[in-house]
Length: 159
Image 1 (tube, rainbow, N blue to C red):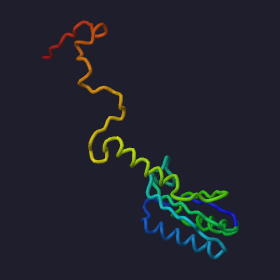
Image 2 (cartoon, rainbow, N blue to C red):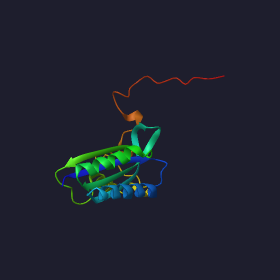
Image 3 (cartoon, rainbow, N blue to C red):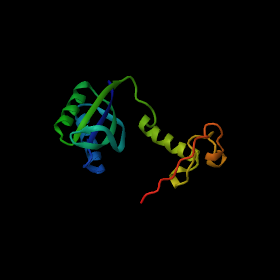
């Protein structure tokens, strides 16, 4: 049977529980038509690059599907009829990936970088540029040398 991956976006004002219910609804549509769903990931509420139907954010969900083409077409038809689903993308794949998707791996990688940088998440400032000197190592404005030899500015008196 062919393998597919489907990602769909749900309006921002819908609760996370309602998104899970939509996933279950589409799972049952696929099961009725001879298909099955493997991995399901809810990527949560994310900011969109541009507005879609007056929504600035959307809930993202991913489903790995093993189903005949007719089952996938019926699921996509159901998605188009639902007002809460903003966009959907279904692609045919050769095989499903093992483990978490790239979106889930990205979140883990970002957390790891924060820990390596010196704990930005707990409010401590870490230097993003490791080779940059501290402010104390820089010369004062008056000690800069040739470029700093500019005529003195006169202070204006305001009445």
